[in-house]
Image (tube, rainbow, N blue to C red):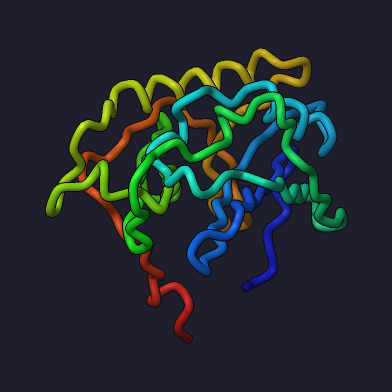
Length: 199
């Protein structure tokens, strides 16, 4: 991985999921606060999860660790164990056999244009109970979007006013706050964009 940029008041969080069927899922998101630190962010995440945000994920896995790295160019990563009191917000809740290659994509939108101002997260594996052929079934996409929005509102309402956002690592690095969320209505596969890694 290339060197990470320095972005003032921005923290990179790797959400480590428990292993499932030999896979070790990880999601990465970014958060910003003018006054907060790593401990504050971990506490804010614990208190802000909403039931159903990751509910389409197989019940065989859950978020078991936050690896938090301030993008200040000098700090090290610190690992935190999520508060078990909020397990509904951090656990997959979907029954049935997991489809290891498929995920639900939640897109992050900002008020600015351009690909560097957008982000996404892949939540998976989803299970057979939610997929029929190439489409999802019995998934309340509006409820998922509402819960992600409520998560962001809760973060802003914490003592250090954390904001969920998109961090672009190009051109020195820029953090942009998220204004809305969209859950895609078809299963997705996360694929490496090789053009960004090839010389």
